[in-house]
Each structure stands twice: as structure tokens, then as C-alpha cells.
Image (cartoon, rainbow, N blue to C red; front, side):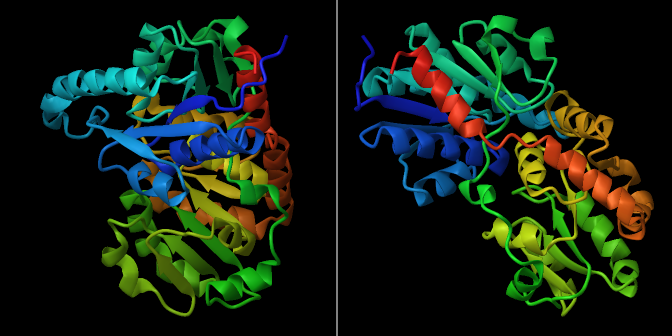
Amino acid sequence: MRNEKQHIKVIISGGGTGGHIFPALAIADEIKKRKPQAEILFIGAKDRMEMEKVPAHGYPIKGLWISGINRQHKWRNWQFPLQILSSLIKAKKIVKNFKPDVVIGTGGFASGPILYAAQQKNIPTFIQEQNSYPGITNKILSKKAQKIFTAYDHLERFFASDKIIKTGNPVREDLHKPLNDAKKSRQFFGLKPDKKTILVLGGSLGARPINEAIKEKLPSLLANGYQLIWQTGPKDFDRYKDLGNEQVKVVPFIKNMHEAYAAADMIISRAGAGTISELAMVGKPVVLVPSPYVAEDHQTKNAQALVENKAAILVPEKKLKEKLCPAVKEIFGQPGKANELSQNLKKMAQPKATQKIVDEIFKTINL
């Protein structure tokens, strides 16, 4: 007989960037929608953006002292073994005290210790693998996980095939709604309603190489009659804010992404898995600039998966200043190309990802 338990206890861990946080929140919201009495606790990394974003969304969160390997400045990694030990001890205490029925990891630094602690107690764990090339932590944790939810094909190379369920990546709820009128959305940002508009995204934390390339090529872009919504990231905002004018809206972080996507004719973006899933829902022509500093170079692999489907243009970071304007010209100068990119990207969207994930979790733990 099916267990109709309402008061389930769930731990969700995902953070470091918006690409891990927003899918985690989407899953939490779907669980709450189905089981209003569910008790949900988030686990994040101290001093990372989830410690602010999750409580703002209405959920409690506990922070672990953990960070990823620094691939640019390796000398800073001396604390890493201490962080792992500290996080494992705290994660075990959290699991012991909270007594979750299920633990879900959507990636980010804190997912590893909390999923490991749950698996040691034989608590069901689930991994939401967002990338086309998983990191080493998820490869290890997958061996004891009940299911792995993926967004890309061909992950049998890394995970047991009987555990893989291709669901797509969860996206923010508002992206399931039709986009607003482009002209009105441009006016929302204080821009001209009829001008070609470029949306620049460096990820939720910003990207200095993208910002520097935009700064250098800004005179050329403006001379061609384009206008920009430019998300610099909080750390870089003071560095570029003075470049804002009636054709350039410079912001540290875009709170209303629905309006930003609606306003854009084309998008320049990093290639994080969560971002790509959002872009597929939006279906605007996109130039992807993968970060070369992430684990396993997974952003490049994410972007290449789109290029293979003729759904995006890929520009390597080291060639961005050279190839930025030609890529923009390729999209705006060839309506057929822009339409092809847009239509192929929309085909890759997985609008039911969150529902599928929660369906499988509930089915597996017999809810």
C-alpha cells in the first residue's frame, strides 16, 4: 500500500552559483506544492550566495565551511583538507539531528559532504547532474545514490545506466510563462523600445573577461546602433558602472530575469548548465563564452553540445575580444542564422524537468 506520509523531511544542497541554487529552489518549491507539510532544510557553503538567496526564498539554510579547488591560484588550497574534515563532521551532525527522509544534491561545494553523510546512514540520496561532463565528487557519490537526474545524453560513461534518468535541468518558475512584450521590457530597463538589444550575462557572480571585452568593444557596438543590458556581477559593478548611458544599462545583478530575457534580441553568456537550460526555455540567439576555470572544463563541453545541434555560437574566452563583434554581426546580419539558432535551442528545452525529478524521487521512496 502506498505511503501517503505528508510530513516528510528533506535536505537539499546546492550552491556556489545561481546555476546550482535556482534548480535546488525549484525542486523545493515543487515538493512543497505536493506536500505542504514537508520540512525542507538547505545546506550551503558559508559566505556563498546561497546563504542569502535561500532565506530570501523562504527556506532555512545551514552553512558548511567548504570551497572548491582554486585552479587559478593553487597556493590558496592549503586549507582544503581542513575544510573537508570540518564539513564532514558538521554534515554528519546535521543528518543525525534533522533525520531526513531524503537528501538531494544539485551541485556546488556543500553537496559532497552532506550526500556522503546521508549515504553513510543509508538515507536515500539523489543527484541532479546539470553538466554534460560530471565532476569527480558526483562520480564518487553516484555509486550509492538512488537515481541521477541528467540534462544531457551519453552520461553512461560516468554513471550506472540503470540509475540515469534524463529529465533536463529545473529552471525558475517564471520562465514557464510566455515572455513579455520586448518593447515594454526594454523600457523597463530605461532603454529605447525599438533598438536591437544585447543582453550580457557573466553568470550570477559576473565574469571579468567578458566585462573587459564588452568595455573594449562598446564603442563599436554602440556605433552599430545596438543597446545593452550588461550584468557585470557584484564585484565588478563599481569598475564598469560609469560606462552606463542611455544605450547601456549597467547592473550588478538582474533581479527580474524574465524582463531581461524578453528585452533581448541576442544574449552573450557563460555556459553554465543552469544558464543553458534557461536559455533553451527562452530561445533567443546566444553567443556562449565558457569559463575555462571550472572543473573538468565542463562549460566548454556544455557549449559544444549546443554547437553540435546548431543551437549556439561558441567563442573561447581567449579569443573573445577578437571574435565578439563578428559573432554579433553574424547574428544580427543574418536573420536566417538567428532564426536557426533560436529554433534549435528551443528544441533542447526540457520544460517539465522539475516535475519529472520530484515524480521519480517520490516514486523511489514510495511516497
